[in-house]
Image 1 (cartoon, rainbow, N blue to C red):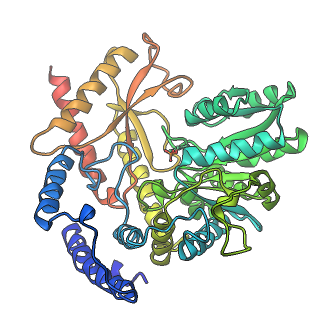
Image 2: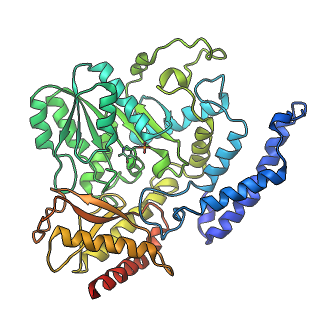
Length: 474
Ligand SMILES: *Cc1c(COP(=O)(O)O)cnc(C)c1O
């Protein structure tokens, strides 16, 4: 299946490939549709080709008001388009528009959903599982926290200060009391602080993030397992961003060994969230939640007078909080995993190996240059850094960062797109010279989530250096 990675393919050729394959597949789908008699489109729905064309071109014009998320020169936020096979699969399934809420609404795509969720559960090492796709990581986390609350109604949920901001919001939605745990200088949950908070005896669930959104820090799930033997609590792993890096964790050569053991320990957690729409090459609308104990399915029990008729099997809507969900999302992920299996060497593992290598390479270039500082060594593929200034104050650094950010993005000839990040202590505490004359420090942040970033990293570095050089002259 990976015959195509020997000969180079340019992005423009890949686009032409899609432009050939998609019409061919639409024709083939039409042959199935023609098994039913052709019918006249109602007058209320009829629009001329010319009108639709005009609207589509107007849309295309409006879409140019985007940053080039597809391009390796875009190295800012967690944004990139899905793989072409995902886009085509989504588009084709959407012509039928199955609803994966019920087997009645999406018989074919519900089966695909069971298959891909089983693949994800296997990747993390769950022997048994209950899980499904969701419309996002936020909803998936909401669901995991809801189950946690059903099991421990009067307990608190703990998560680190670097956890995704939606955890505290979702705790509010669920009426759960939450506790913020401190982090160490690498942004990982501080287990001494967690232990102190567990001693108070009210924590029922600990959310551990394997790959924080800001810097990709990996909470020590393996060490938390030890604490779980001492204090009884659930472990929910928020792997929305980092989950697929589990593929690289079976040896200690690609990830740092403590991060690799944290990923391996996910097998012992109680629930997991992973977003295929982040590192799984999917379009938005594809998160997932997986529970280790299938018996939590009992919490979802509800009566639906309209939906479940064609099968006695459990319908996906009977094990999820949401009702309607795009069957097309399951089709897209299914097709993607056929082309990119969840394996360490080929498929998705090979993709992530490149993104990880890109981050390591940029970190190496920055470390080797006295004019730059890393906020932390990258754990996954997110690099955070700032320029050293003569004053060493956080305010002077933040000002230079703002300037580099604007300059790189607005360079007419050769733009580079980075993101910014508000650093809070104890991050960056390894920099002894740093004078915190302002509460925060604005750093540059680059999510190198495209495998092409590896080839492009030297050039990204050179261009950021150039923007910085201009700043120094002033
Ligand atoms: C992105 C992210 C979320 C939220 O997921 P959405 O799909 O954006 O709703 C939650 N946790 C982490 C760690 C994330 O990176």
